[in-house]
Amino acid sequence: MAVSDHVNLEQFMEGVERRNPGEIEFHQAVYEVAVNVFDFIADKEVYHEYQILRRIAEPDRVVSFRVCWEDDKGDTRVQRGWRVQNNNSIGPYKGGLRFHSRVNQSILKFLAFEQTFKNSLTGLPMGGGKGGSNFNPKGKSDHEVMRFCQSFMNELYRHVGEDVDVPAGDIGVGAREIGYLFGQYKRITNRFVGVLTGKGMEYGGSPIRTEATGYGTVYFMESMLNRVNDSVDGKTCLVSGSGNVAQHAVEKINHLGGRAVTLSDSGGFIYDPEGIDTDKLAFVKDLKNLRRGRLSEYAKKFGVEHHEGRPWGITADLAFPCATQNEISTAEAKTLIANGVKGVSEGANMPTEQQGIHAFTNAKVLFAPSKAANAGGVAVSGLEMSQNSARITWKEEDLQKLLLDIMTGIHDRCVEHGRSPNDDYVNYVKGANIAAFIKVADAMLAYGVV
Ligand code: NDP
Image (cartoon, rainbow, N blue to C red; front, top):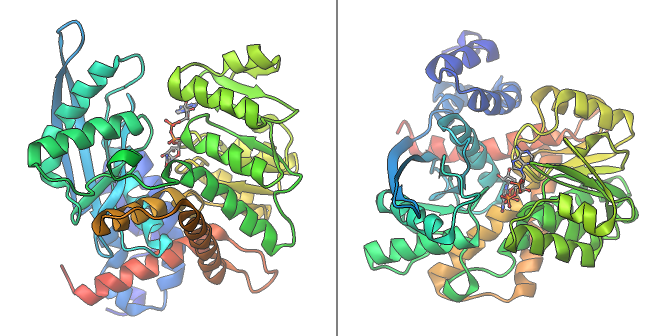
């Protein structure tokens, strides 16, 4: 086929939309990658001939299943579970499980697609997958969560394995849920293997897995700033979310001499101009992780403002969206730019709307897309898999160094493929997409048409 015979980007996206009706999050994720990859492969016949992008955008399989469990009143509850195995060209499927009332197939397909690229960027041998359920753990007792997790694993265990697919946590799936899921896997299969990551330290977990995503997101920002002779030191930072990623982003901002002034949850955001220091962060960890409370309590305790909505109207140097997808609208991106934001590093998955990303890159804001900026979590999960296979635990200081090296490596690969020859501005979105694509695509070429 001659290059001129190939479908163009619009035709490609029409096909994606036709084959995946109504799955708007998935369309958005594919478009964001395709827009860069189409440019890159324009003169690379082999990628067209073997339909590499089309194949990556078609999950290897989507498993959907019923999950029945009994609540504390003895009533039968029915939920839906999924595992999306997107691509295992460079290693076993790997990606988190999300429990949230609004989880659906489109969201999990978008996350599994993104995960394929993110995992490739880490340089570790991991393919891409994602899963979850529309089960909402909020307000449920520990026993209800346990019964749900056990029932979920009664089906999931058939599809996962240490060399097949290794799920982890995500929104709504933390240490408690991973414990219940791993316990049930072990009970059903009678095998103690690294089938899940994010495990407790007593049963095969890795040091610094909990901190890795938030720390990595800030390391990536530091690398972007260092490249232009600047740093996080002394910068005012907006952070959204108040869960695992947000808490550890704040912790690392503090280590590097920055000042985080906001945190958010689904009830609104707090604005603390003095900065969320170590003691206040300890309060947040206790509030969110142990008491599962609301940030409005922080506002009362420390006498600061609590507002509805999101924190992007506050003037600051840097922004770290660490809550959920599409939490920076195009209008909010423009507000951040108008207020002089210098850098945005995405801790959450796909938190910025597509036009918002264009606004940031057009304004030459240093913008780190989630697939690069939050890859620290899955990178340490990959290191947890290695430790489990070898049945050893590495030292914390060695893992800290590895995390920093991996994030620096991802940054440098993005620069290699995203730097503009005209003004030295780095489009990290383009750089991440192309660097990640090349590795997966070349492995697929090696296998032929399979
Ligand atoms: P958590 O469940 O620990 O925290 C999520 C936070 O986001 C909570 O504060 C939650 O508020 C808030 N939030 C969720 N949905 C909304 C919403 N619609 N509006 C406002 N706030 C909301 O999750 P994590 O910190 O682990 O994950 C956060 C993001 O980072 C997700 O996008 C996840 O996919 C991504 N990520 C996480 C990784 C990890 O290692 N944990 C790895 C890579 C990506 P509330 O308390 O009210 O629920």
